Image (cartoon, rainbow, N blue to C red):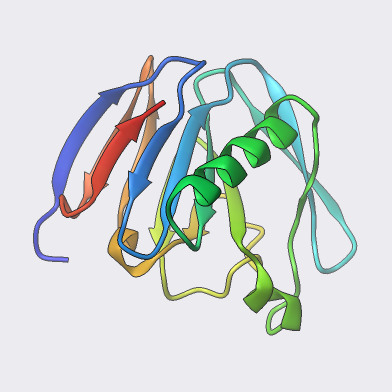
Length: 157
């Protein structure tokens, strides 16, 4: 990525910010309240990710359009409102290639197209489409800061 642009985008707790590439898109929200996200690891452990209201929840979809956006909204609801856990698969698990969406949460998330979906318990990295690979998203008070290639569409709902 030769051009690295910084954009600060205002984001209210009731809004979803969509970053759209040609083959996938990402939905980003604020946690909106202090919550715990439970993460099941391949080793059989459970890790708790503590989120404060300004932290981020990001859902990466490996398709685009209305179906992807509905899925992203649903996953955000399941995590933020229903307390559903995140499940991390072991490396080279056959189900990994069937995943339609993957999730990450925290105050910083880096998108990467060169990792296997669903196999990273680290919450600062998230599998994404090639167009969004290398983009960094940082939580900021009342906003997010996006650092990366400017060749993608940003939309809020």
